[in-house]
Image (tube, rainbow, N blue to C red):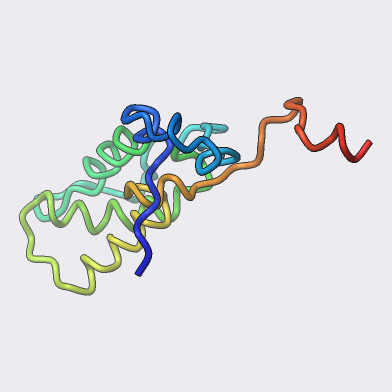
Length: 131
């Protein structure tokens, strides 16, 4: 199994991006287009589960989440809400949460894979060779 990719932010702090800049060239860090927003009205905190609290935790710990992540964030918040309230969650629920977090780029290895297209207006270095 290959080593997990080092996120670009970690590479900048540790200096790995200076040692091997080609490894980190072209990685697009996620940018916020439209913010995630408040949790949906139907996601309710009760005595046995706290999905709204989990939503807020996810929103603060994964800053690149946007409107397109609302569905998967609701799933993750539902499972996390059960954990926050102290409910027993099974292996399948924990695996579902892990998959959701991975899809949202919330793990160190997955965050570096969250690639968004370059911002419009940035010149492509290869254009000089193809024009």
